[in-house]
Amino acid sequence: MASTKLLRPLLALATSAALAGGAVALAPAGQAATPDPVGLNAPYEYLGWGNPQSPTAVMSATGVKQFTLAFMLSDGGCNPKWDGTRALTGGGDQSAINGIRAAGGDVVISFGGWSGAKLGEKCGSASALAGAYQKVIDAYRLKAIDIDIEDTEVASATVRQRVIDALKIAKTRNPGIKEYVTFGTTTSGPDAAGADLIKKGAKAGLALDGWTIMPFDFGGHSGSMGSVTVAAADGLKNAVASAYGYDAATAYRHIGISSMNGVTDESDEKVSTGDFTTILNYAKAHHLARFTFWAVNRDRQCPAGTPAGDSCSGISQAPYAFTKMVAQYHG
Image (cartoon, rainbow, N blue to C red; front, side, top):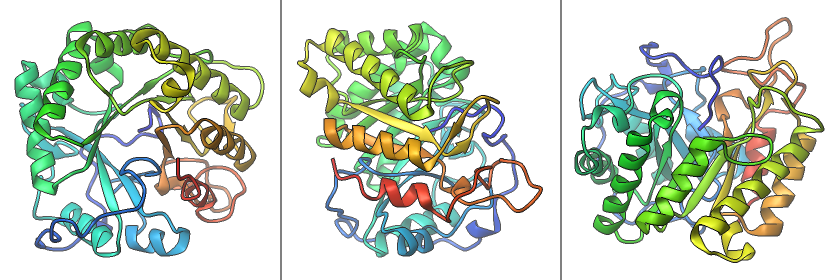
């Protein structure tokens, strides 16, 4: 998730020591079952960036059972790799997923992000893109995927249509899979590209599980980050209701919020635990399809003299304060 242009990882970062380890067999099918729909309350963790914590240690400390693992990218063609460089299976990423599942949790895999080569652009057709998604779905027997569509990928109308069509193919091939699309927003709701994605989805008959906004990096806002997030989410609800013909309650159940903890890329933005409480209460009141944030890596206070970045929030906070709040959300 997470748009962060500055706090987002750059490609080709060295794989964290937390990823060290050899190939491990995948957990048995069905072992990963969780009581909540996969993706409902799955905070982002990026295992190749930001001094990532052990996912199982996070689970023990917070009660969270799910993670959205970032990012699946293009290797230069229409072939998925972690960060565009690490093998799809057989390494530390797979070991981390096996560990999460062995501890009773599960994962969403997120495609895209701000940086790097995007499959939506590198795959030349919807069927090819759906095939790339399918490789990942099959490799990890996924119950949910997230398309974090940003930067050049979301800017192209052709690519937006390709992503929608590919997701529809994936829905048909994988009955019951949860699909989320995550994109930036204005303070009042989706921007033109986001609104177009929603309209294209409705026109294609894509029964998306959660249209999810990232309510930060606004480029200017007024009021608290909690209140502006609520306003942006209401705008998203209206856009989804209008495009799909949903009533308000149904539209709320098809939207999500992917926030950011602490200091964002904008000097006037700081998401506090109080803001997060506002967002959590809003999600509970309207039974949103998804409540998450960027990122577990940052869910800790910075050492003295260290600014907010890829591994700390830049605000005074208890360890995992935001992850613990996501773990309280059950739809």
